Length: 154
Ligand SMILES: Cc1cc2nc3c(=O)[nH]c(=O)nc-3n(C[C@H](O)[C@H](O)[C@H](O)COP(=O)(O)O)c2cc1C
Ligand SMILES: Nc1ncnc2c1ncn2[C@@H]1O[C@H](COP(=O)(O)OP(=O)(O)OP(=O)(O)O)[C@@H](O)[C@H]1O
Image (cartoon, rainbow, N blue to C red; front, side, top):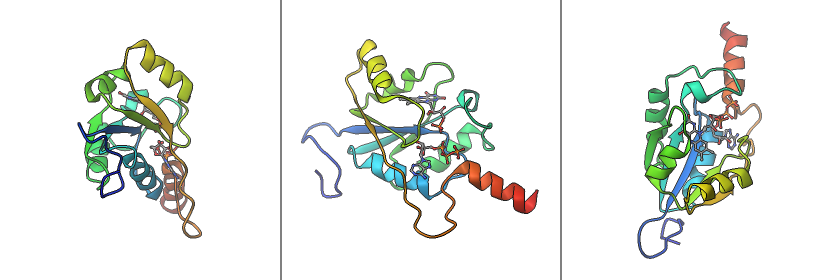
């Protein structure tokens, strides 16, 4: 562990990767990114392309804007735009020691580990936990923020 609580190996800095849509940031995102950062010396974040966000409504904000705002969070060393068609292309470029899946990300840990293995990428897979609400009415989901906007301003 280094002085700031992150893991080190004493040699090259270790790299952790987090990923997601990150449309309309909220404290749940900050919690996830801080937890992911604790898995390595450097945190790299892959921001999903809008065309790959198929399991929920389209993001409101363009991918480059989502990347730039995520990249401004203290825990994040570098934010990267995701690849349009092959999610392992940025992983090959970043060459992480660990991929930290979000607590509710639909990706299966074993399936991701098997895909990494198939491509000869030596990398662990971990799963982050959820943020517990700190106070009543804390909105910890982009979808719920959008619903609130529509209720109040729609
Ligand atoms: C290891 C890993 C790498 C990913 N890389 C990309 C990528 O390069 N491009 C992309 O559009 N999505 C990528 N994704 C997918 C998104 O990050 C994300 O899971 C999904 O599209 C958005 O949904 P979410 O915000 O609910 O997780 C990756 C996911 C994982 C687990
Ligand atoms: N409340 C939360 N606690 C911990 N992690 C979170 C929380 N909300 C989102 N995350 C994590 O942040 C990453 C990006 O999440 P995403 O952009 O899908 O946000 P979201 O608020 O869950 O969106 P939506 O409400 O539209 O599903 C994912 O890995 C997700 O697991």
